[in-house]
Picture 1 (tube, one colour):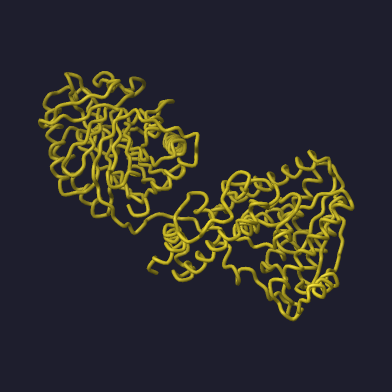
Picture 2 (cartoon, rainbow, N blue to C red):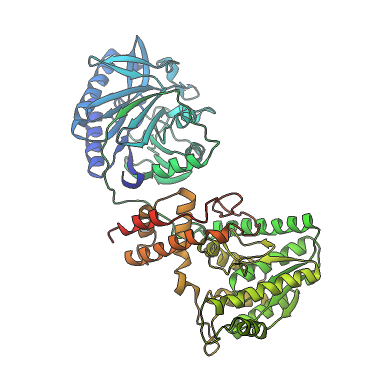
Amino acid sequence: MKDGYIRIGASSFDTSITNVIDNVQKIKENISKAYQNNAKILIFPELCITGYTCEDLFLQETLLHQAKKGLDDVIDYTKSYDMVVCVGLPYVHKNDLYNVAAIIHQGNLLGFIPKQHIPNYQEFYEARRFKACPSENTYTCYRNQQIPFGNKFIFQNRLNKDICLGIEICEDVWLPNAPSNQLVLEGATLILNLSASNEITTKASYRRSMIQSQSAKGLCGYVYCNAGNGESSTDVVFSGHHLLCENGTILAESEMFEPSTIYADFDVKKLNSERRKMTTFSSSNEYETIYFQSTNIDLSLERFYDPHPFVPSDSSKRQIRCKEVFDIQIYALMQRLKATKIDKVVIGISGGLDSTLALLVCTMAFQKMNLPTSNIYAITMPCFGTTSRTKNNALGLMDHLKVTSLTIDITKSVEVQFTDLQQDPTIHDITYENVQARTRTQILMNKANQIGGLVIGTGDLSEVALGWSTYNGDHMSMYAINVSVPKTLVRYLVDYVSSMYPNSEIYTILQDILDTPVSPELLPAKENEIVQKTEDIVGPYELHDFFLYHMIRFGDRPRKIYRKTQIAFSKKYDNETIIKWLTLYYRRFFTQQFKRSCIPDGPKVGSVSLSPRGDLRMPSDASYHLWLEELKKIDT
């Protein structure tokens, strides 16, 4: 459970109807295997000790007596296993029969959770035999001990309070107001569902979407364990369809009709982080807490982390994402133009990805508003580092999009400033670079005043995070259209738009822009080739976008981000490389906050944004000391 991870299993086996001894033996075998696999929680299906489809045999004293003996056997067997085990059985309490989940830890029965909603329709007739859970918590005498009995209990690990369990049984989750709705508000980070849900056509798909949705709505992990082979086929068939979901994402799903145990590594710290951020997630303190004590272990994680969290790996989903983002940008700009009653914009075009995307957004917005694209003043401002490739791409794109194209060579203006500042032009320092960037912004602003237009910013989210901009240079605009679009997504957005212009010169130009190295082009070119490549200086943008996503989205600490990065990029970057760029990321993220504190307005397009007015409010004077100290302690 280091870094908040815990491995949980859902286990089914080939059930023997009413053969408790055989079922219990299989339960014990699966417990042993799960423990060897470092699982800390293992759940079995509803009524697994006897089988779910015993029908009226549940009313037979012989079966009930044997079920209790079977539970005793499981409890005793777990004494040497530091693992929470949940099994289902029929249980008599105060002369009534209940369908219960028994929660066990290291030879201790922690409690019985009875099923709340008893189905009595179509193929289910449980109300013929079972009573619904009492409305209030109570206790039942079991093995001369008073054992909690009811549905208003939470089970929490004393040694790791992020591990907080809530239990519901099968039908309970199918109801509009499922017990888990309240359990998560009472603090349960993990919902365990012991189920016996039969298969009919399309039911698996519905079940899958329901459990995903329940885990997302509850900001929780949801473990759904379903009865499978061996149950009676008199009227229905069971498939053993297990689902392990975390906040809307399926971590693991079993093959249907195959007895199996599946596992997933849940991140409970991430779940609690999400809850802390969501102030509308109102916690309650009405349920009783039952404590158990389970030690932490360091897992060799078996879960996937997408190396490009902002970019869907599936091509069809990626197209949908790109359309959504592009539309948000377009309609945001349209609204800003309508609100300001301005019908002209000014934009600096370098021939790079960011300015290209911004120009494409402007063009589409003007077309939708029935404004002439000639009202878009696109200015390319070559200087020392400009290559013919980027300049020609910029000019060609502007020409084919039918915008007003201007070329203003800033070399003389920059040289005048060098003279005024007594700057040696052979010294290619920060002043040498930033004079160029600020000169370009000055021209854009003045041109906007001249024509009564808005300056459209081109900087993206990744640059904002790293402070990779010149203060009051490309850092500034009148509306920052790309401000929350990460660099890793910009490329796919431009490619998406290029598909709107098939077999055209625009498509050819956009594809060449996609192949051009990312560069501010502020240092002199050599033999007309770019020499200043951004990723050689600040590191791979794919790494920085990964760091940014997990830091801002989940509040992960450095060692956890490092661990996730190892998993996501195991075949691409070694540990030393990850530490190098993660260290640089933290240094720049903290020291460059002063730039973010005064960035222009711009539309939020995804779950991660750094707007100082909404998503990230942090002092510019904050120290990165704590974060870097933790990185230094990591043994690579």
